[in-house]
Image (cartoon, rainbow, N blue to C red; front, side, top):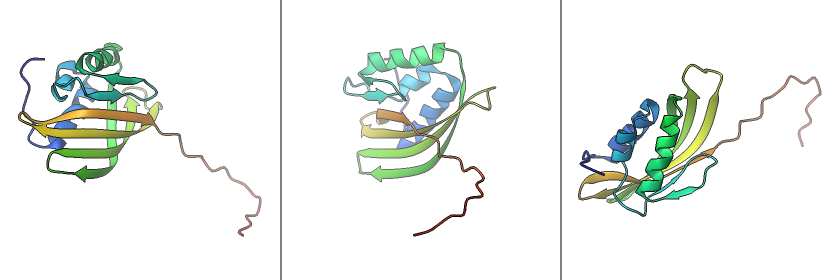
Length: 144
């Protein structure tokens, strides 16, 4: 697991997480995770991954696939305590060079503060169903 950077804030960890995701940087991705076998990661549509080794292997497979992603974050909601912070966000994920392929994802990221600064202990991402699109309709609308 090697030497890891000290992250001063949960936001620093989150920024590094999304940078690693966009760059496909496995070393950076794993530097943000706590050195703890209790860490948890759930990718959209995937099973629950427990522990550093299984999470590292899953990210390695994702990054080895070769697609680079662009991620836009919105609707950040935060719950904070002195030693833990939870971020709930909406991610708009787009595969670079495929502008028509977008994947909206709801994600919850949990960070804890320890002796080596802040680290991620949980990332849970779920696909968000697309909003229904309205089609022009000449039928009169009746409100009750």
